[in-house]
Image (cartoon, rainbow, N blue to C red; front, side, top):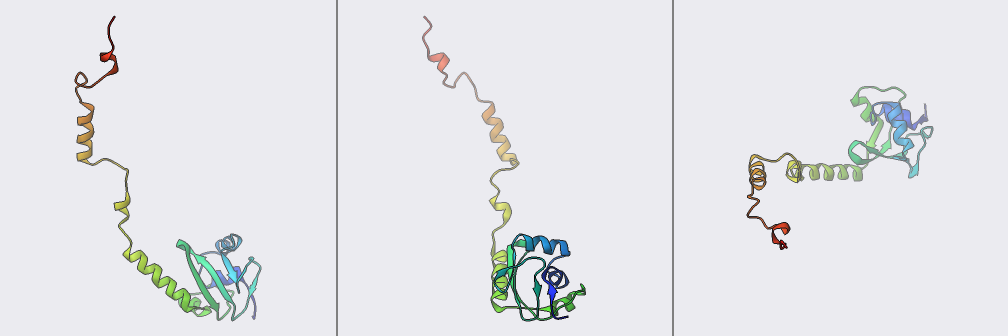
Length: 142
């Protein structure tokens, strides 16, 4: 076997869980072979450069080393491709960015009020209405 459909190869190399998912990603123009947008029926051969977007928006660039029409164990699947140094560097940078990222809970602006917030809301509701300014009290009674 010297050529294989790209969707089948992506599935066998364990980039996507099913061939259907691989075909959908290809249909969304998220897979390129040798710099060209691929179709699901596009055939790849050893030595081709495949750029794809895997879950989480991470772009990977791999060189096809072998072909297999069967999905096997992960160690065997990893022998079907070789990741480029640029792709490995981008993955390491993304990993470091996630590690150094801020706590998501700190960015929550709205949500359920705390006990202190609730007390402040209750105090604001029980304002003495007679002491507040009102336009109806200011008008002259003629």
